[in-house]
Length: 336
Image 1 (cartoon, rainbow, N blue to C red):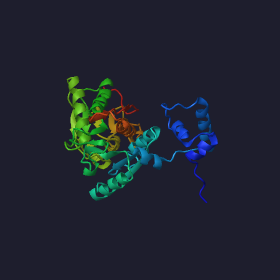
Image 2 (cartoon, one colour):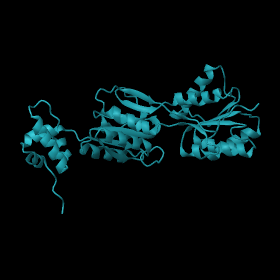
Image 3 (cartoon, helix red, strand yellow):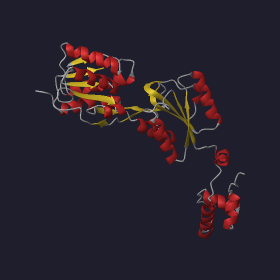
Image 4 (cartoon, helix red, strand yellow):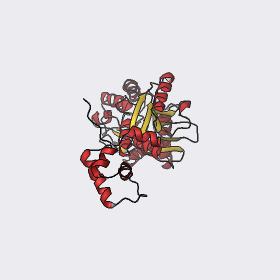
């Protein structure tokens, strides 16, 4: 049998006041003349009865449900990028909001249904998130509703968005090598495709840091962003004319393949070749020695997106979230 839900009337009767007085006290109203004694009796009664407000009824009155809808492509089920959801959940709860999460796998039909279902449930606003940083086109049904884009952007100047600060990440990766003494033997590893946001921005930051010191890359080792192609490409480069003192790998998977190729060539990290990478996935700490990597700020993206969504004075535009450099044992001075 379901237990009786404690109502506002129960609290009022326990406190010996009217239902209206109890309602005003529990709503925090300060514009009503209610005695201190009555306030204390109401608050004590609410604690004793373990009173919880009926949010559905409150939502009908205020047209606020204190819920947020998060629509993503494949973000929610990815263990690594799922930290965006974790950050959004925690921040929402801290502000008294619950999160509805829906994943579309980039199917526009599924996306349309999810958005409509969340609108039918009266969510107060939306986060529209992407697994990889990219240009995005939110569904038309979201127009006119509070919206923050997460890890994606679009051309609508009225939209707020949060993305990783990949340019600063590229600068940080190179500067940590420069501080260790590397100058003319820094090789970029991985193909920086112009249509990939992370690749384009990381390369821009790398070039900025080198230009600042009047330096150039020692060379480039082109490969896809996976261990197998990276291993083949680095092994081929080492068997030829390439003599790197440091590798800037465009992600941790490339670093994994590069480690294998270096070991096969009889080169040690960091004694012979230093390595720095991006993403700071679990792979970065598993490698031996653990690789220095610039972290994707997934939790921070989720946190900041919710804060912006709940900020009624938020300004449109793209906000870049810092990417921290996690230094480990893969960087040393260049060999003499």
